[in-house]
Length: 65
Image (cartoon, rainbow, N blue to C red; front, side):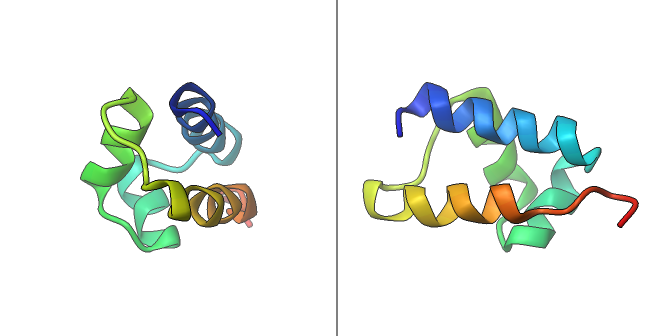
């Protein structure tokens, strides 16, 4: 997964779920600043962790569930 694809996944997860950055971070076990950096494309997980975090993001349920 490229950095652009991962950034798009983070943005899409927040749009789909309606969660704030801090809430999304707490749901998957990372800080708000990590979500912010991922969403802005400033950083991305190391290669061996990308699949894990991508799966975690895809598994997040919407805010009203």
